[in-house]
Image (cartoon, rainbow, N blue to C red; front, side, top):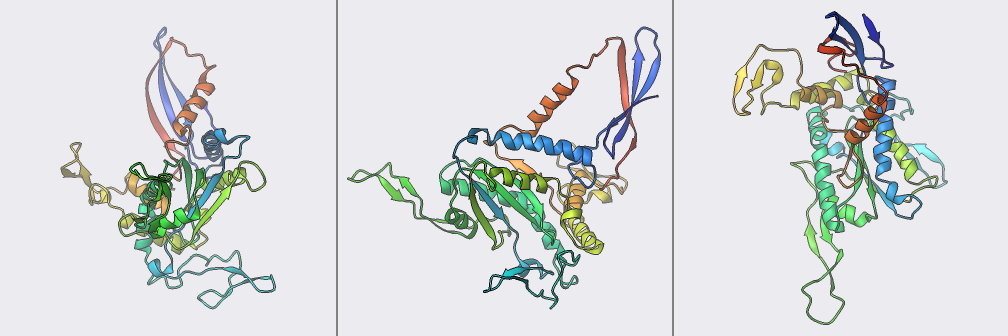
Length: 379
C-alpha cells in the first residue's frame, strides 16, 4: 500500500480506497493527516504551521500602521486573587531602597527558587477552590467580550483588537489584548472597577452659545459576567509600531503565549494538574446539565433526551475543558474589525499547496476510513 508521509509527530492515519475506471482495479492508499495541534510541546511541526498562520492574521491588522505613528494599546486583564480561590505559593521580586532586588518570603515562610515546582500551587490543597478556578476559566472568554464591548462604548468607537489567553502558574486564565488606537488607563479602570465616564462628547441638543461639548458624567458599572469580575492587577501600556519595544516585540510575546499549553505554563506537580483537570470536567455540564459520560444524549430537535450506554469517551466540550482546565474558548482571537481570519489564511495556503497537483479523471475515490490515530483522545 502506498503511503504518503507527513512531518507531524502525531498524525491521523487514513486509508483511501480508489477505483481505476479503465481496469476496474481497487487499490488502497495510505495518507497521514497532520494532527493540527497548536501546542509546541505536543507537535512542533503543526505548532509551527499554526504560528505562521497566526503571524499572517496578526500582521493583517497592522498593515494600516506600517510606516506611520498610529499608536497601539496593550492591556492585560488578570483573574481575581487569593481571597476568591485561596492562597498559593508565590515568588515575588521587589526592589529595595538601595535599588537591589530581593525575593519576598512566601506565605509558607520560605523563599522559593525560580525553578521551584511549588510556585502557583495552593498553600492548602484541601481548602483551595479548584471548582471556582475551573468555573472562572470557563467564563473568562465571555467576561472579556463584555469588557471590550463596554470599553468601546466608553471610548466612543468600535475597538479593533487581538487577544491571547495565557495560563498563570496557578492555572487561571489571564488575557493580553492589543488594541489599535489610544485607550487611556482611566477608561480601562472605569470599565473594570466601575465609576463615572468623564469623556467629553458633542452635545447635539445644545441650543445656547458655546462649543456644544459636554461631559457624559454617566455612571459605569464594573464589567461582570455572572458572578465574575477581573482581579486588581490591570496593566495598560501604549506602544508605537517598530522599535525595540514596539508592536513587533508584543506580537512575539502574543505568539509565544498562543502556542503554550497548561502543562508548560503551570509549574505545579502532577497532583495539582490532576485536581484542576478533575474540577474542570466535573463543573462542565453539557446537554443542558446532563453528563455525556453517563449515556445521556440530546435528540436532534434540541429538546428531548434519550439514554444510551455509558461511554468512557468525553464529548468535545468535556475534552476542551479537560485540556484547558475549564477554559474552552480560542486561545488566540480577533475582533471583526481587525483584518483577515484564520479561515482565509488557511484557504490561501491550501490553494497554494495544491495548485500544481494534477488530478486524473481515471480514478474514482470510493471512500476513506481511519486506520489508526497517533494521538490519544485527551492530550
